[in-house]
Length: 532
Image (cartoon, rainbow, N blue to C red; front, side, top):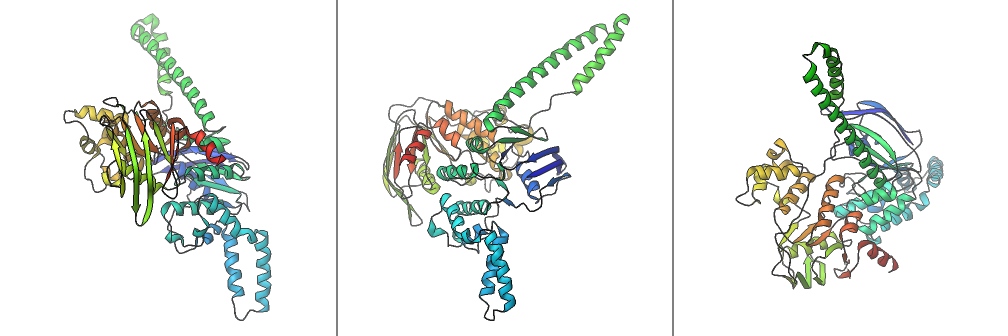
């Protein structure tokens, strides 16, 4: 259990939130949502004790163990994977090492024996005898095979390290579990396993996530950071979203009524302020007008970008034929005998645990790299636009501001006012367009890349993890744009709802580089692999 009393935080002269009074209870899962920069991760850091609030307090009953998802992927490079997971219960890990040191002493004394007996008792109470098997179960569930369990963390790739740190957070039955974006770097099967694990978690669970499906499946409550306040609502994300839309509608109606009343009062004041017989009424109405003007509706921090992909021409009959593609990278075969034919209008999701293989296929289709064998044949009417997973080559070392960067991809006759208008609809307003692109955040760079794609007029779009770095509002905007796009789409994403609402065909890249092709939607695909 966590009790939050009158919590506020001012950061860099900016108030993130204030006056928060909340109680987080065992057996519930609380999803923390809010726009980018609203303070979601910061709020988790306050709950964990890593950051001190400006005012207020966070109270955790004595004896309750709190576990968090660590963000430093290099901290444990010198430790074996299994040990790193067990460090999730630091006391248990310390006991294990102290016992090993005692038993390894050549001059084992009677005092050492008494100490060892004490440690053995505490070790048993902490379920130490099952520690290694429990850690291995977590790692396997998250998709790390047994042969990796005894390697050093420093030998793993970034996504693999993330899975180990997530297993570390889940290890040892903590009383309170704080997870910041736990589905990042997880393939869809690992996310499904994590959902099952968390739905059975008996303690207090608090999660920050941009995955709407994940929030819907596990959350009993939504904690919304907006209007510089933190408020808690019962229900999952969809329940909160529909309730929020209703509340926004009510607020807009109220605002319109206020504006109508203001115009009525202004008209009255203008007509009668010089009339002595009406002066008293005009004065009282002016006071009422001042009150209405002061009590403006608070502006939400949420902003939805405008995303729309419009093809310049309709595609013909022939779209794309991929035949016998093989590709090896750093001695590892990522793609093996990959062949598929794309029909007009199909929207294809690439899934599987090997994101390197997915990215390699995208880069081959985009003609950034050549396959070792095989061919890619595009229809003569097809024009393509590609969203890469790694957009750093577009921004690193670039000394242009956003407007100058965007102008590179605009038609020669496009006016600056039109460029600014499009960037404004993608939430780059006013002086934002003069920011250097080298200092943009991850989410801002993604919106820049999407803006670039919207200019292309392509009738076939390829997107490798477009939902990374985006907040829920931007994900929703991209989601709707791809649903409404009349052309062909091939994409990857870790967002379950994103895939479910767009894809009508699933291509799974298997660990050996071959593919399995499913002419169905994502939910039907999941049912089929469960049967398999």
